[in-house]
Amino acid sequence: MLNLDTIAKAKMQSEPYCWTFLENLLPLKQSLELANSYPQEQDGFTQPGAVLVRPIVSQLEEVKDPPKLNNIWQQLVDELRTNAYRAALGELTGLNLMDDLMYIYFFRYETGNFAAPHLDAPSIRIVQMLYFNQEWDSNWGGCYRILKNHHAKSVFQEISPRLNTSLISVTSDSSWHCVTPVTLEAKQSRQALKVAFINREDYYFYDSLYARRNKFSQLKQQRYPRCPLQLFK
Image 1 (cartoon, one colour):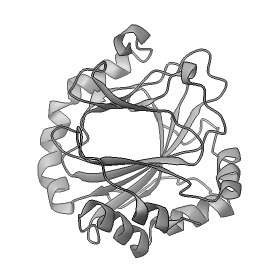
Image 2: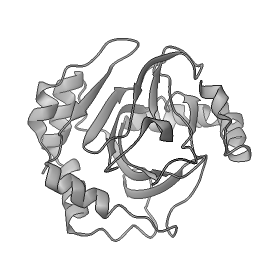
Image 3: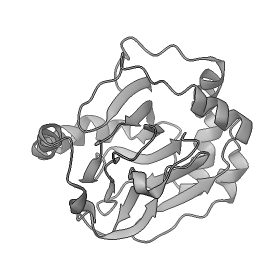
């Protein structure tokens, strides 16, 4: 199902950090099936910040009560776990991912949900986001912003979560990004799948420091889950 040639033909951007945008990573028919069967129930999703999250696969810790995937979602997850997929991402980014830990999560944004400007944990080396909305209007918010610095308004590129598009980013000390709040006009939730590769040594050493540094930011997102839109304009 995964079109690894799409990854092979992609070019990494170098400004303001390493990232690339992909289209047609999946066949359109399968993309529509995945979008139509993206989980909408509340059970199993948690809200650690201002977004609904449900783990599917995690090599970091045991996934309790994993979701029951239909055949097409199981096929996609299985292909994302292959060495061929790791190798394709490694060739694109110049990183050896074969020994990295991996997690795959559903990420769903409802009205008012957002992600404030942040850096991913130092142990996370690559993140790929795949989007599963059949339609998405720019007035609905929910756009991924590649930022020049830690300010939400320092926009280098804004990416709408359209069907069969994907974003790959390499974590660095400058890889600031955010997701704008989903507005009241949105006719559906923002539906994404997150795949992350984690350096196992860095995960155990650095991430406890990262968690303490970002504790206040996470608490603030929980306290103010409906962020004023003007902060992003």
